[in-house]
Image 1 (tube, rainbow, N blue to C red):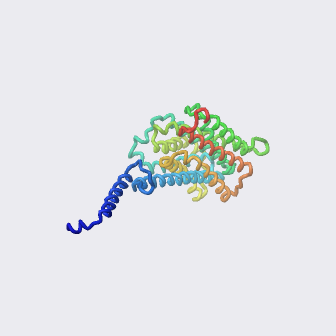
Image 2 (cartoon, helix red, strand yellow):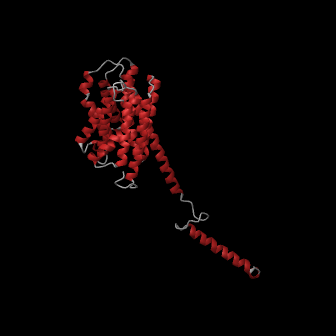
Image 3 (spheres, rainbow, N blue to C red):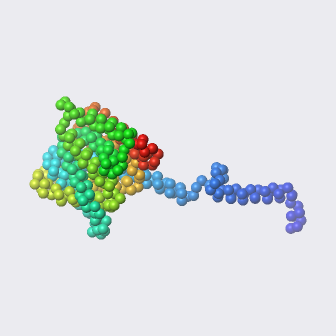
Length: 349
């Protein structure tokens, strides 16, 4: 052994020791979070990669849910327009809330966890239910006479109304840029409504009333979200409206002509109930600013259903007005996101 050790080349031995020290130093640097050499630094732990992948999957799931929600809302309006040919609108409104209540009760089973359905603000919850009922009532009357594309375009004014009223009602004041977007959005609505003897249709006032009612519903939803559970905010409005409207719905009841109409009548509540639930789930997994622009996918479904089911072709004024509302709405969402993240100055919102 001594003879073999003595035969080792001293220069080769020093080279081997230097290489071993360099390997140890590189290993130490690779675990140092401040070391950034691309050849040495580790790219990230598998757990972190899985977390990033999971977050991306949740975001995509939220986008799929929000598109599904507005598809279901388009199905609701289409069903109501189909039924309004033979049935009283008030009858359809009442059955929409009755079937919505039945679905929500079966899905949530409130008797298992009654505390989650006990309202902390019963007066505001009742007002919120009345606003949703008013929005449904006016909308179902409007779509009996208007194209689905027309009611959808007017409905898109809701974010502008919410932004305008959030200042005095919620203390969330809009700046000049967002007010400019609101004014442009309303100009788009004027183009659709055509307030003159030639193109104006009185039913558009019903659609505007529906939009204002829904805007107050959204404001109350924003006010109650921090205190009330998602389950109570889904179930209680339907139950309240089903009870309040029972005498009216029964008094105007008309015979349902066939099984198809019965199926569509029950489907209204399912479309509304599942749509609201899917909307809530989408906001649970994806930030609201990311979801907000997908509100306008509803217009695609409404135009499609209107054309293939009712043979409606939107007029040029409707399409141009809708484009103006959508464009200014997207800008409004972008400005609100910047303000909430603190990237804008308070006086330039």
